[in-house]
Image (cartoon, rainbow, N blue to C red; front, side, top):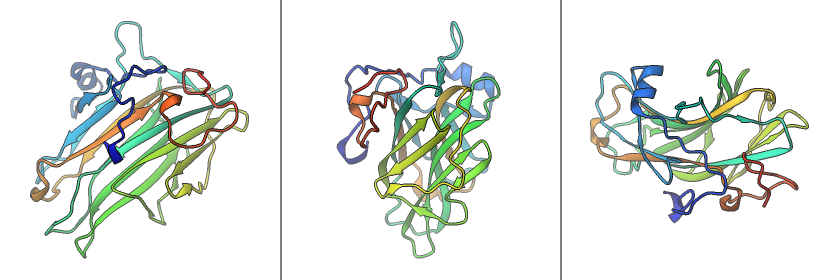
Length: 241
């Protein structure tokens, strides 16, 4: 993963949230979805690009519902934090421009409806000058709240922090460039959430990128987080540093 850092780095997490749903479970939700290759205690997913697809390729990693239902998280107390580790494919040397080749996101979804509570997505492609473009977008239940009309440029690989403050009912997203300005930073603190990873390869993406990979991790252990933590912050399991 990015900069030599892997989420959980092979060490048992004090706050594990494995995205261990089987392919059969995923296909039962939507037969068009597949499952990424999983590692790091099922908290890191990797997708390999196919290139030249007529239809898009969509992979999802979420917690298993077997045997007793999804392991949910509620952000209704204190300030709970998690981080999102990502690495997009390397498109250097591209000969075809395509601004929207693939994207990966971390999403908190309503466990009952699968509607968006918050979503943080990194999209990647190749501009007309054949340089790689990586962009950030953020949504909440009201729609896109950052990165829509004004592109937020990202590095090809990085770490993103998400902080959920139940006292104000607001969330904050921070990248290496600083805290992201959101047009609406509210979230519903009473919703039981399922965190999951979603990978997408757009239809018709250039065949020259076949075999390249992108990866993402849900970082839930507060001891492994990179960004400064607010006083009293906990991981999603309630552990303080």
